[in-house]
Length: 462
Image (cartoon, rainbow, N blue to C red; front, side, top):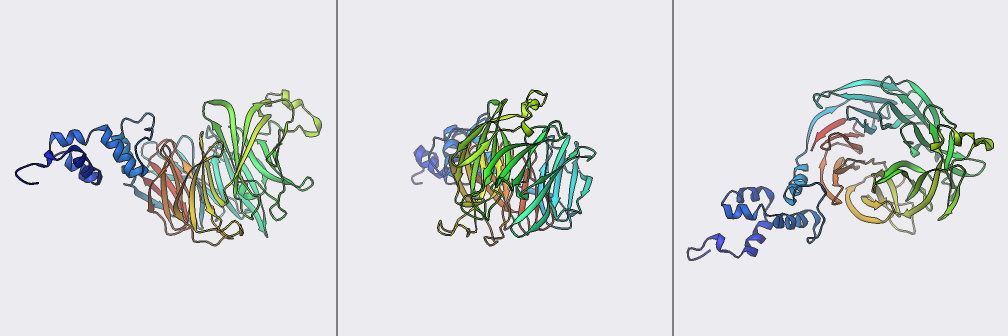
């Protein structure tokens, strides 16, 4: 700047371009220089442009998150996520830890491991930094405990495990326990084991099975308290002889602004050894007779009465007779290794095929894909990495809160994604082995737990 002119004599567009190029720490310092710069660096137009430039890598036009105060606050919210910290690490399990889940009240979490145990931890209501073992559950007759989940009111716990492994088949088992107390109330077979099982509502749950007579996989609907007999909710014809179990990773989600309606999601296989497609079935609600639909080659059936007995439709449990109104599926051309749903979106971790000619070989890239409930692809983010070969890949479980989706990868990194803007916010190295699962507290969206093959449980503030 010559002839006594000041930097404020620069044209405003030039000064703005300078500010756009600066990191946020420098912008804070610049805002303290003078009132003119303060006004510029508190202007919503500036921060909208800065947000789109730095986070969306695009021009303006993005709709700001509802209930957010300003573009300034949104930029800082995402920036602060990068300032994560691990405040404790627990080494209690004696083998790889496969899964972690929070109770809906946020006061408990449950870890499951290959050491054949599931441990329920209590988080102090006065300080989340106080975490103690409340129950330790042993499953010595299982090969391992693969996952757990609490029902909506946190008075029941679903525990899913593997009974035996042989060749390409594996049989699992689901047990339902009261909580607290951990009294066993229900046991059902779960085939294949990586259906995992899921809650359908507060007192009913889903499992997988295989009908050897009809040669089809089925999704079974069970009452946790035997209020009505187990029923077939969905059946799927076998499409490949070496893949007798088309159902993988069952998930049920409510639908935004549609009461008494749910979506059933699962991964399935049409052309490869691994699950490579996502299917969605809309469950509309109550009906009084079985319904059959042939949609896109996948047979779906309503709940069928046993031996022609329809009395249960008129019982107090008749609300569990569901009409399956529509089905959609999409071939991702990738091995599905993780699945999570909200009331509007489906989040998938997957490893793409090397080529469409050889569908059994997959790449080492872990793609985070975002789909809507019609299974339209909204975005693909490729940040995670895998190191395992195609026939020995790990499942990488996802978790979501109101603001974020979190996931691990096989190199020990933890990834945080923003739900509204569908962007990868940050990643950080959290473990020395595969991060099998990351879970966010439902009551504190900046509190997270991760578990890994390094046998450690870690807690994070971000």
